[in-house]
Length: 210
Image (cartoon, rainbow, N blue to C red; front, side, top):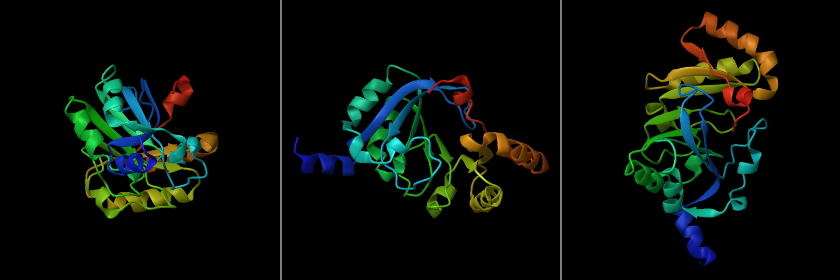
């Protein structure tokens, strides 16, 4: 296939730069502990300095993959799909999610909200980042707000983001992994003083699974 044609297919969402796909246990947020098939799409320019999947940033490193193949591979596993990245909304998710819904999957997304919302979703986890703030539309659709706490200023950021929600989204504070021992006591104190928030942990890292 010609490069030009392939680029157009990626642009329309018929192909996506697939970094990896794997079956595991959801480790974070509301659905912690649930078996799920993760589809990690390459491409992200949000640029969090503490990102633990920086290899996902450059979409050119990940082969454009036909969404029919992605969907076919997913059918072997759980009916819960988590689409993550990178930043999956860099790309048009409409055709992938329509294809998955036709197979009766429950489809979740983990997104910074920095790009326009596309696709059909059963659960939207919004994890906003200061460097590229979410688009206004996402606050109307978020089921879960998960703020990563790297330093004390993130508590203020979390409240600012929660104030923008136009849904009854569940609210989570999650320590950034590299500073978890420092930030966890602060998060515990904050949640106890502000019980609308809950604690989220990266339990998959404690369990040593993907």
